[in-house]
Length: 171
Image 1: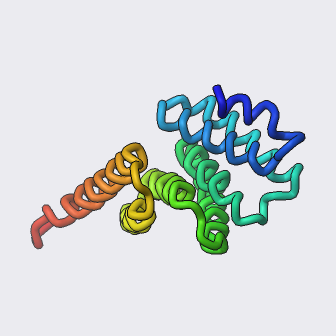
Image 2: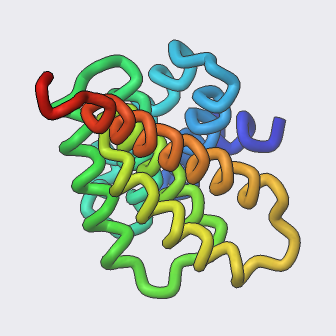
Image 3: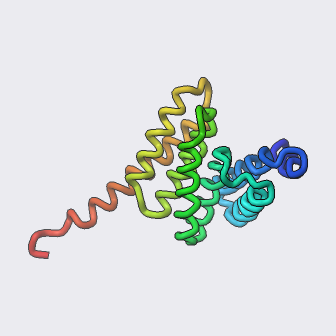
């Protein structure tokens, strides 16, 4: 209820907060496998980024990361890659982000990279997220997200290696 309230009221009072709330809600819906709602929420967040002229600010990294994930899920691969690049660039520019923020951006990007077939980048992002997790006291959900992504990245990488390696020289 609090996030939904922030999404409704934030546009006029605090558009920066509103875009983060919308991205957070989209990430939650994606986690619940409600991709149509995630798509609507992240579209609203992207639109508000443009209207409030916030797209180039580093704090917009989460919006672009979640947008990349949603677009990758919808097979809009070029748009997903574009959002992924923007999110990575903005996160790099963010000075001392709160650990939870860095984790959410990196986990969303790791999930995106898995959808795009890049397990190596996904694994690297989970390693970076684990570093941020060390700065949090009690974050079982963040730890779970990171572990799930790491396992999926490792499983994906292993499955890719098994295919070609199983062929003999004669084949």
